[in-house]
Length: 176
Ligand code: NI
Figure 1 (cartoon, rainbow, N blue to C red):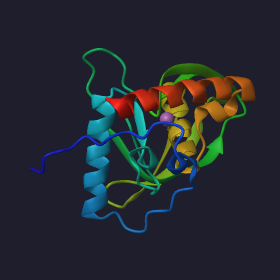
Figure 2: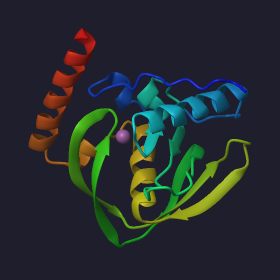
Figure 3: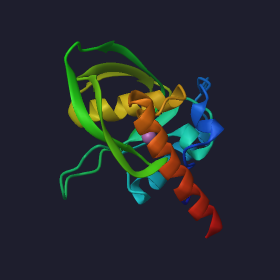
């Protein structure tokens, strides 16, 4: 067994979090290892989703596990080149947070459900409908691959305030 490793998570603001990431051509062992490390990093944080740019890799890869119930079996998912191919007109509002903007949360309105196509860890095409928290999470993570953060949905004033707080936290972390 290859030991898994947690990776440092980039904090906003960081130019790498504003980039459009490159599609994955082939799912290599190296990318599978990265996906495993990202899952480990996500569970350790703890969080329910993580995108490759958040660990400094500008490739279209996200991982997530939105199982919240205490004692329920984990449901880790690895999605390469995830793409929303259909979305509901109905919307829902969730209070979102982001591991790159720690300890800050805000309501974001998104389509209630989305149909997503992606390539799994064996390179096979997959398609599935996501609802509830899974829907919010997959949309939030796909946004990361396009250089978009949840605070980009907020008013400029709120975005600025949260950016300043995150900047402060980043400076404090750099010092310790
Ligand atoms: Ni995020």
